[in-house]
Length: 597
Image: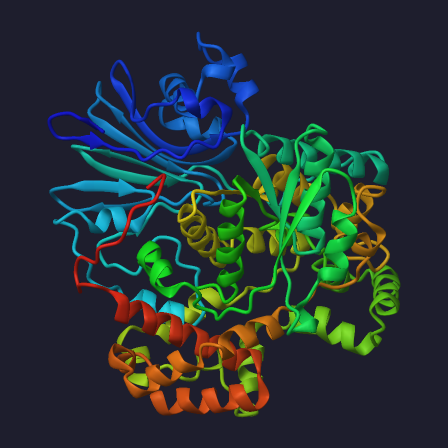
């Protein structure tokens, strides 16, 4: 803890890099003081640029950040690669500078009023401050129940906000300013001389992204599902690690849900020297370890499969792994390239379109009509036309389609229908469509929410999650290459498949589709039936937000048909109900602390 007259910085350290043993935060350097949850990946570049006297092996990332701020001031974040959330006190100007990494891997929350500013990497730290009220933000609750995570600033508490990804903040006596320092440019184009050149460069950047995230003195693990994303990271990490250092893999398998089980793919990846596999086959409910989970969360768990992350982090901690690589955002970074198809249609390149559709149909054993409707007609039809068609057919529109159990008075009171329409409507894009769609998917709010809850899960066990597919250098390259590198000869994600030839097992490299996890989630939710019955017996505050008769109907339909939409609606209701009933006090819930908060 460091304190001055009107300002104080604190830190709870989690040591996961070799240099962090030399860290003692908050770090003070003359008039600058920093507290940071950060892993900086372009260290070599910064050491070449900045006047740093200490050895790179003894310089923690916090000192690199101070040196960058001293050189570039508020523009320092424009020179950083990695995952970070930090606050710097500048004593010379008596101002605070805060920043969050480009994809929001590291959370950063704050409270600001006319008397006080407070920031933390976890909400629960702010809620321990007496002058920070814990009043609920019911608009955010409506967003949650509608499955809408596009608001990147507000939280479930009225007086606590988020610094959005790729944003920085400056606070001083004159006021405060928050701005975006980085964005993805969908018009930027990279042109190389051949397919082989694209493949080489993609692999180089993926290896760089993984290598940066292997920086650790302890045991390294990887979450391995058997999909292309996690398998790519696993095989590249194993290839880069010293031969005498094992790579632990952690895989959730579902013997009671064969359609969601990927063991056959996982086994082809782990069939190599230097991998120590760990299979997790526990039959648990969606809210496993509920009391512990609620103490760490202080927000409703939003991801339907978060229980798999909880079990992986727990097992990683059990075997001494403190860094866990994950494939999150791989779908979006690699890109499926399906935006190429409507782009070909809208620009009149019929022969190219027909060739790609025919190839895709052969791979997926699907009809041309089915693929045309799904990937072209649906995508090029404006939302306004789709809404009109749904009205003609008396089908639910937008918000009603997302969650028909929402209480109508609640929807009207907070303007949720207009809010949903604003966030979810997609404009018709006639040019550069594929890249714009990919950019949109990369910056989605649902991904940010997943990073935030996953951070809490892993913090509970002292494990740091790291995501190579959020490396900005890899992401910017992937977005700028021609869409034909992502979708080629009917194959989605073509650039990754080709780049990792002879490294990925054939069974994974050329698998045509992803495994759908609906069956595993259905079983996990069904194991929560006792809690669901308690919810209906004593809904409490849930009655303000949901039509309980409609929710009961969805419950019956879930057990009769198992439709994914009914499962998601029930999950959100249960998650919110559990969270609300576990809040220990209305305005100031107490939560336990974890490292890096």
